[in-house]
Length: 204
Length: 204
DNA sequence: TGGAATTACTGAACACCGTTCATTATATTT
DNA sequence: AAATATAATGAACGGTGTTCAGTAATTCCA
Image 1: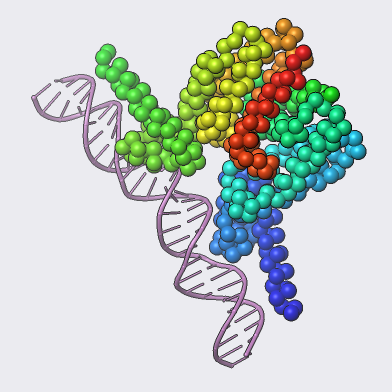
Image 2 (image 1 turned 120 degrees about the vertical axis):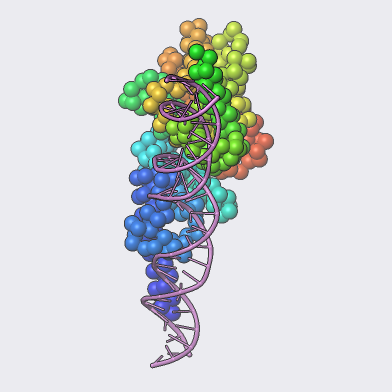
């Protein structure tokens, strides 16, 4: 049946059109400040139309988040590929933090804002987010298997390094490091050093 | 001049009335979900009146944030008082994380949400926030002076432990640890362990 | 003490927001 | 060509933060 195929294709194209516009606007203006009306205007449809393709703004964000995790995953697959798990762990961390600092608004909607998790809970999984975490967890597990680090519980170890990375990125993008009274360039250097030092301390 | 004294006193009382209501409601419902109208109704004034005492919602948050940091500071002064800087460092970290997990909505408006920093930038300082950070920085500096830890740069060391603590709390309160597929109780234990392990690794 | 001036407060109005739904336009099927 | 099914619309609903002309209360001064 050719017609329903085309209909399905057109529907997917419409969803793409919406998501592309939404992603660009979320990144340019932030999630909260981007209105459904503004997205609709950008793609030259009426506000109501968006609701024929996505059930609410939260679902829109869920999709954008999924794509954002896809980007992070691609970055990991490109830059964190060392066979040596210890090296790979370091690559994962630096890639993660660099991604966050380079795309603060994407990072925001992936890891900081509250909204999206509503839909994520309903759908029962955190698309691509899971995969990104596994990337870290695998490197960590291999490190422990090969007794390269001083942790024994790989879950706690993963929790720690992820939290450190997230803490560094999120305090930075939310301007909380202003309290340090240090120039932006210095902060960037200190963030890198912070990761390296932590990895150094972990080393068996 | 007694009258203008009383006027000033009444003005301060009014500001207290507003802030107390705002804080309670921010904590109960969150910042975004608390409307100016709702605060006004709670204290039985019209919405416009609030604007005679605070210039916008952001300034309201700035004040609430200041009080929240006051609470954290009090907690630190109560629970992190060991003479031994190493012990004190551990007390600071555990107090910080316990505070965040016990008061997630306060923590939210202190360290996570974007809004308040606008006013903080205008006012040029982060009231009480600075003092809380100094509490950590001092303990850290003493540790380094006494060569108790393997860091050399106290700023990087402070950055690291704060980021770790913040990462743990904020990923938890924003439900990102769901990816771990672990029960809430276990996560709480892993968070504590994560801090202890990190301190252990830091030890000289 | 009584009228003028100052201060405090109000609440309707403005320009937004996410979302819904009866209506209209388009496309497909019979 | 008419009937049906699908797609899109945009006005309307109940909400938001904020402003401001108008009113009520208080203080001041003759």
